[in-house]
Image 1 (cartoon, rainbow, N blue to C red):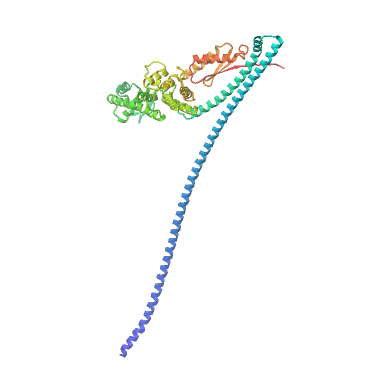
Image 2: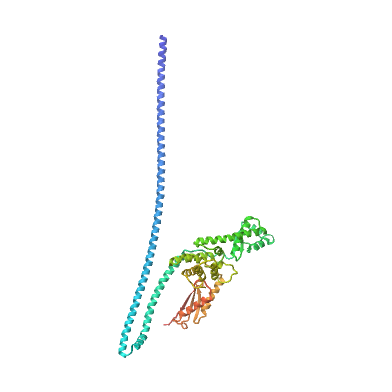
Length: 509
């Protein structure tokens, strides 16, 4: 027992320190784990806080970006509203100014009318007074006194009346001129197109110059077959990468270009294939013509045109006058006439339709003889157009009297489109001949010393001898020169004759 007790006591004495040591170690290890867990928790909290801050910052930036976008849109809308308000104010101001101008003109006419009545009353009073005086002084009969009074007062009354009428006419001309300039400026700004184009040639691009030999063919057989099938001359020269097609017929030239492009794409170039593709291209050209006419009518809002008229409109795309494309010119005339019709209260639909069709006679086959205005009017009549449209077409070169206001507008639109700078071109030879002819006509008149055509032939300055041409006769001579030039010279637009009569006196001292 003692031995067992001693063993147990020894075991207890040895185990107790071990237990205490183990317990101390475990306490230290637990403390380290707790601290490590706390550090990890702190790191997680810090990362979470940073992530939240980042997300909050991104949201804040998104909100700021959206706010800036909305503010920019609001600023843009505000600017648009402000611009529209300014435009409305400007138009209201213009309307008020026009209203005031009309009111001032009306008042001026009323004032002058009252002045004329006062003059008439004054003359009547003077006439009555002198009548009584003459009857008393000369014991004349009323009829004799009337004759004397009329002869004495006639010149004075005529001068006063003519002066007053002249003032009224001059003021009316000024007012009318200002209104016409405004209407024309407003109308022509709505129709601006480039006109001058190539007249007789079309250039087709080649992928490489090796194709030229294949297009020519053995002994030129492909060129001969192409020209026979299309009616278009094929010009193969040293120009790199191009072949030129030449023909006065624009439709044939267009079909020829289509044929050549198809041959180049297809790669099979021989007479049989050329004839086959030429027929297809001619059919495509006819489809293109009709589609062009239809689109043109739709563009201008011209409705109920017959198929023949649609086709002729399309053919006008391939016709030119002094380098100006007839279809583009007709579209421009239609727009100008329509705009002027709106301005003066005429029928804009009629003006636009007549303006579009006014040169349709130029698209008719070349074997038809006659003026294009007359031929076009007859063609329109055969296709059921109204009498007003027919008259506008017939009269746009003054070959028939104007029957409507719209006919006058079409003629004015035609002149504006044809004479604006850059619209038309003419050969240098023809230009110099026209200039020379104008100067020669001016020199034919007696008393003319020198004549110079300036401003591209739109004005001629005539210097006359003051001893032979009097001041009173100068306007007559200028008018006669202008009339003779108008009869004998063809020129676009108007030509101004400026007659200069100058006298100089020199003394030496």
